[in-house]
Length: 130
Image (cartoon, rainbow, N blue to C red; front, top):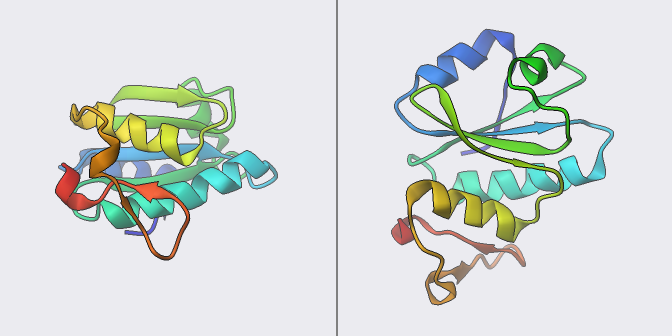
């Protein structure tokens, strides 16, 4: 699943979904945010049908940033049942993003379970890990 661009119109709909939501708060001018969007896309593809992924750009929807007290870019918030459960503020690399997802699902990290995506140099969670 490719990350969905989130705005005021679709935020409520995404929060009502049965699947958990991983939401990246980012900015188009921030290079760390752009890299994090790439990692988010990789995780979304690896966990299709287990996790919704989306991003909010401060230039297009600053109100959502204020609603969730996001003052650092990038920030990742995990939602379950419409409520924020976990968050990570500041620079995030693919390993930290993967660890956040694994912690959210209660899976202890075990490097031997990770598989390499041949299209990328990133180690990813594959669906059979969860």
